[in-house]
Length: 71
Image (cartoon, rainbow, N blue to C red):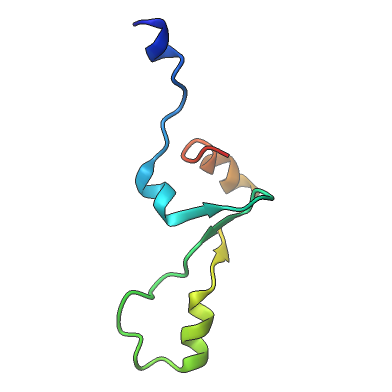
């Protein structure tokens, strides 16, 4: 192996990166599940609450996230 290939660092998991957002303070946000279709029967309040992002995981999961996302 050459020096460049060894020193490139960790690769980001692109599919995971598209689903997550890291805030300035280091919180990881994601969309709420089950919001792709069949939402017309849901109440307006439920639809609006589902638009907001929620915080992803606990401290243990944040350590696991660091291998997938550059923080």
